[in-house]
Length: 216
Image (cartoon, rainbow, N blue to C red; front, side, top):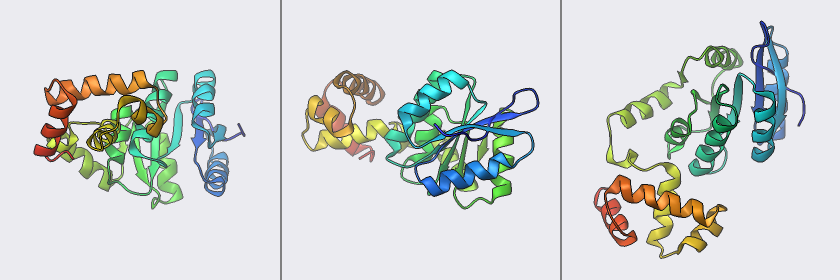
């Protein structure tokens, strides 16, 4: 893991950067390294390496790329929060649609920004998140507001939505696990929670209810 910015050590805010694109990662890390009161503790494009590092260093802020699927984003954020409960996650994404905002918030992220922010806005957001304040891009705030109003499509998490979509294709637990790169037991756990949320007792009922409610 390369060296990047930090969140607070004394008066310093220690930040760890997780961005998939090398150029973007280097640019953001270089930007933050030049900010007074910040210290970049590490940067990486590998999610598993990031979780191990965060558990060891416990940075105040972890800047996370929303690349991949919403389900992958949610699992990454959840893993970071579990590894270091005091660390706050700020997600950077290209879009606020397609389940990414919900995935970030369900995983426990404190902030969600789009790549159209200016360097100054990014720095201000990191400082705010480091203080414990929630920071949402206006488009993300609109999505979060819709979620809080309890729309039916928000009843399932992005990962659960992925599993439901695969269920409609007739895939079994092992096939779903291989397709998503997760354990069979994890699939079973997701299915149990899906059944609870939709108040059903079988896979067939779950698909029927989800389609009737417009979730699928």
